Image (cartoon, rainbow, N blue to C red; front, side, top):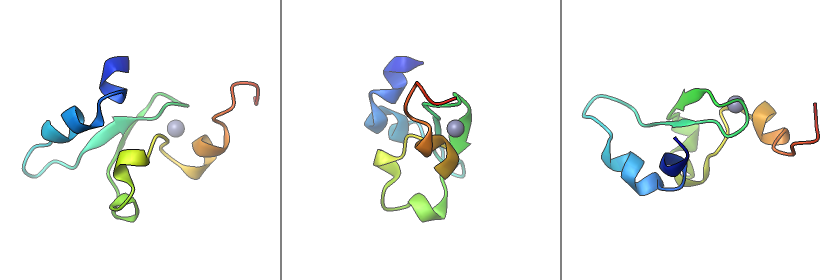
Length: 61
Ligand SMILES: [Zn+2]
């Protein structure tokens, strides 16, 4: 699971024809699927939502 996050290019190669790529959110650990708004930044996306992105610090809960 963790090694997959560290290698996004390998993930991209796993993409099937009609399947959108997906990743695991580093905050809530849920899978999330490619969205059009991420088209240009997909490689950098680590969180399923703005909410999770705001909570990347471990001390916030
Ligand atoms: Zn999340």
